[in-house]
Image (cartoon, rainbow, N blue to C red; front, top):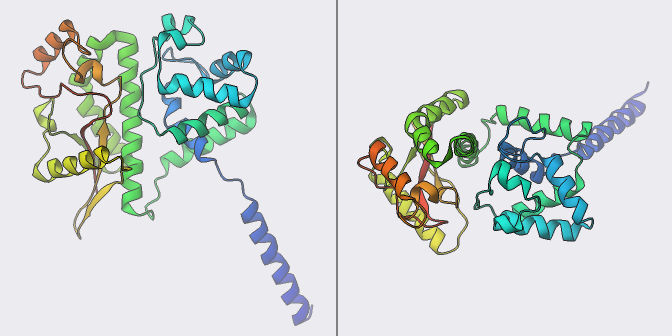
Length: 302
């Protein structure tokens, strides 16, 4: 083979490699959102009695809403404002209760609902995608900017803790959830820290447990996030980096589920619940919150 022929062959091979790379199927952001947030409760196969599975949810909605637009509007409406009367299958209320209201962005939820409409969650294609996402979740990319990496770690920790808390609420009620937090929250955070290889903690300017009291700098950062929230700005992880320590700070925002234990006494918090809080946390400051307020921070350290 002469030089010209070799050059042509090399060029052709390079073009083919670039083509294959460009054609490589990327995992949609909506799929990652579903697995990392919604799959904490809505398992692909309903092996745990926390919430209906995605195949069950899709079949129920498709039975009434065949068109994508109608399907999306109906499901999105319930997710954004869950109420017993708007629950499509009333048997779910007896089995699981009403879903908590979460503070996810509307655009993320809308893309996720559209993906639900288009996806067969029992198909080999989806199961392969699901496994890829789970594999990615175990493989933190150290080459990412620390601001992105620390947010990813905080999101993983939040999802894991939230899953366990919701499980406690569903199985033992609000009082059981308070006991769960008292006995397990700090140790579970430490387990997640060890698994991810980063130090994690939750802190607040109004802590329930004195061990979660924010220091002076952390309280200042909480105030920065409160200002951003009031101004309607999107949150970005705040970082502090030196030669010996990297820190990422990510806000904890209240949702409807939080208010059962952190809301207003007599409005969101029952007398029985408040009595249990006082018994377990005599120095409690973590009440009086409304929905969508800053309750504290996740702090990620390396």
